Image 1 (cartoon, helix red, strand yellow):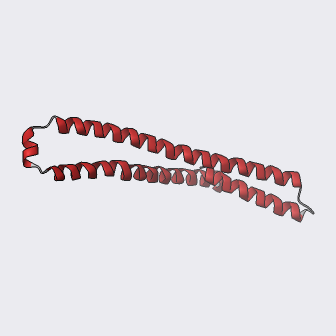
Image 2 (tube, helix red, strand yellow):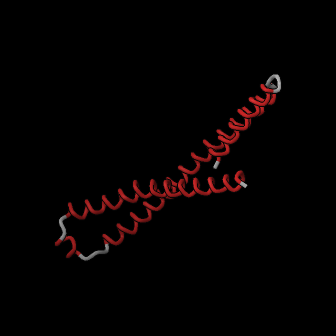
Image 3 (tube, helix red, strand yellow):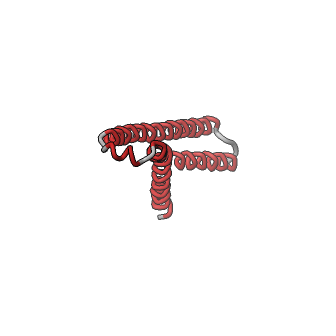
Amino acid sequence: GSQVTSSLQLAMWANANIRAEEEGGASRSESKRYLAQYMVLCLLTGVSCFSFYLGVQLVALRGGRNIHSIFMKSLLNTDLRFFDLTPTGRALNRCLKDMSTLDDAMPEAFRSLFESIMNCVTSTLILACFAW
């Protein structure tokens, strides 16, 4: 949402400069005000993106830690017959593949899903505000 707001602010700034030039000269203070607003919005965009990605990674780390703990408890509580029948390499590869999926693919899928939802919501709000 803040990226779209920054783009709208930039468009308003450009339109104000065009109007000012048509009227006989651009006001320097008005141009500086638009530039300051745009810079604040860009800064907020950067902070919000960083916070979002940090939050996703922290949640993914906590989830991976919980799953790993549950997995290890169940593996250590299994019957010894399982270890007699299953080669160690096969069990280890399966564990590593599952943990890799949780640690790598799931956070990226969640980020993509959340960004898509936010893009749809933002586009709908912009259309609702400016189309009617």
